[in-house]
Each structure stands twice: as structure tokens, then as C-alpha cells.
Image (cartoon, rainbow, N blue to C red):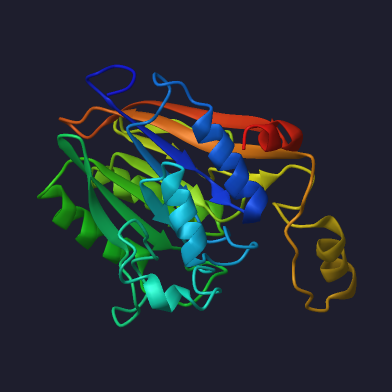
Length: 276
């Protein structure tokens, strides 16, 4: 086990945006020393395939880079082949608070050496799709998972900061180990440990091209704002990529986070190409 052998080191990547984001994560994971490697790696992948959704090929590629669990959000359905493989993709989660009839699962329990880690994926309701109540569903699922393991991690894919903070406090009182906000693609500087237990950040950020509008090409983004006419976003390609991530260490016996650290790393495209 890495770091302090009494703790589990978990690495959480913010939203991966397109090929630049996938390559950035691949390079970052590949450059970690044995001591730096996490015991468990999670990434939000709803934008991983050309900015919208996740193909089966990219799911397999990210698995090969060392990602143990993939969370998502409202864009997970944008690549239609998702319906062909989501039920057999053992690392992939869609938000738990979609209706029960929706394909896929919203939480899983993973093996991490001699311990088990529960991961829950939830979607916000403020300025987002109409989905079921994340508070009630989170409470029910946390209680169920705590019967198996004290280590529980939540990815809350949501637009509104207040909704993220409120649900994080609610989940912390229920005993979760970590709560990561995703979706807005801008890494916040408010990482903390709530109630001496829950590692928290409002948004983990994104992995992709730095010279962009949250990973997307500037010109098409500008046109949407200037004209008010729908125009499909294109993933930004550039010389420098970024990795936004959060690292926490969890006491596996209590399930409490004992440390949290934001990660902001830049990777030059030439450097990344040379490492292939």
C-alpha cells in the first residue's frame, strides 16, 4: 500500500475532456513513481469521448491506464453505444438518482487489497436534468454500503455550488469518507475535511487542454454566447494539457479521510508524445 501503510491513498480525476484529457491522464499515471501510485483511482468520464459521452474503446483504454472506477453525469448517454456495454462495464457508474428502469448502476463496491471501497455517483437537480432526489437516495445507499464497508466515496455531478456544499454536509453527517464535486470543470480551492471525516472539494476541475473554455474550443464557445444559436462544441486541441485531480488518504478501519490535497499538473503535448 502506498504512502502511510495504515491508510489507503485515493486519487480522483476531475472531468476528462476528449482525447487531450485522456492523454493527460495516461501520461500522469504513467509518470507516477511506485511510491506515488494510488491504491485506488477514480475518474469522471462523461466527457471523455470527443467531449460528450464515453465509447467502449475509451472505457477500455482508461481501464488500461490504471483507472479503477469511472463516474459520470448527464452526458454519459451521448455516445449511443453506451447502451450496448454499460451493463457489463464493471468499473463504470451512471448517476444513481436516474429512475430505476435506466440501464447501468449508480453505486458499486470495489475490492482494494484487503479492504472494500464503496463509490456512489449522483446528479444534481439545480439547473440540471429532472432526476430523483439525491438527498434521499444518498441516505438510503450510504446506510446500505456502511453494512459492508466504512469507506464510501461520492461523486456529485452538479451545477450549483450551494447544492454541492449542502449535500456534502448531509453525506458527511452520514459518515462518507470523501465527497467530490464535478461538472463545472473549474477546480475550486476549498478542499477541506468536514467533521474530521469527509474529504471535500466543491469541484475537482477537468483534465484536458489548458487553452480552452473548460476543455472546449474557444471559437465555437464564443459563437454560442454571441449569437445565442446552438452550435456543437468542439474539444480544444493545444500544446499544453492539464490534469486536475484530488488526492486523499483514508483510514481503512474508520473510513475517515486524514488528508486531502489538490493536484494541478501541466503536461506539454510534445512531452506527452515522446512518452508514447
